[in-house]
Length: 114
Image (cartoon, rainbow, N blue to C red; front, side, top):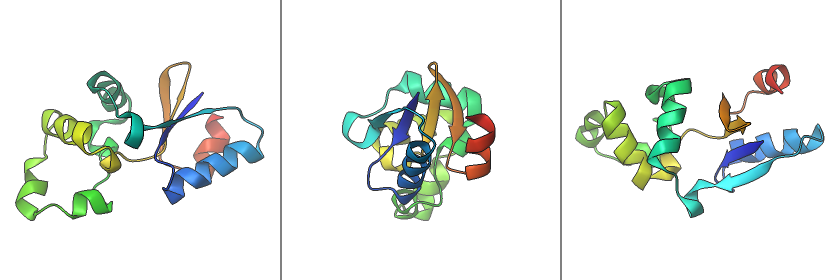
């Protein structure tokens, strides 16, 4: 199982702590340092929808001008934006057997899914 995120994100830390407390093994993938591929983002778009993969509530997105925010309005524009601004990816994302299964941290969803 792989947990995608950035190490200084509180939500990612909560997910890591939860997994550790339950004794669930996982690998951590820091997409801020390692980047993310177009292929991986496209897979996540197919599972969760592109509208949910971008974190419009985060500081990275909110720092954009209103016009810049409005221009990020399709799978193609979100893909290009997230490739260059990985901090704007909603996190964490959990994959099991190379398939995305969870987006964001919700203890009830984690319990039910894992």
